[in-house]
Length: 244
Image (cartoon, rainbow, N blue to C red):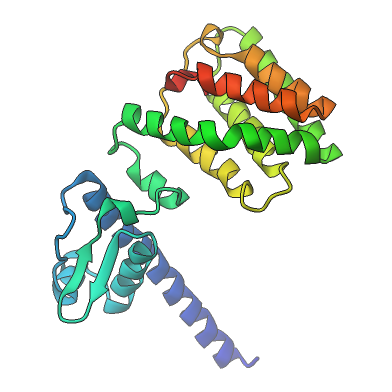
């Protein structure tokens, strides 16, 4: 490639990268207005010209932002009617980026209870599958994580950040061990939910380590029924965010 063609390619990449940053910024701003109710269901967004003026961006960046929000179910565009906010039933609440935008807006308590009901349905089955299909490498990783969780509980003062990281990783490995491509994304989703919405414990006494131990041991032994039962037990005891 000649120097001139290389320079043009680099300039194009820089412009594209800059626009990408702008469209995420615009999408985040509009999403949080929708999620908070500032923009209500059925509201029609201002024209492209007005929005470009407000954000100080090009039409290309704005359109990319609106396309992103449409892909998450927040917006829909209709000829001659403009772009409007869709009903909540269309929102893709399993989208990690959308959940991150919800941080600090949605009621933590309400969202936790709804997510717990959903989690009670799928995680025991995921744990059963993990007991059957986890690879040697995944079992080793689960073992390492459980040892770390045990060490955290035995250490004073209680390290909240370290526990959050280890516990999220523990549950993520379970979903990744199912050998089922439809379960795997939920492992990543859990980490986002834990980080953004849960009120976490302040001491080791508030954590169900024994329930996690039963899950760990059942998976390591390949006992699918025991793994399912142990996970269901943890879900049943998870009456508040501190017990994830």
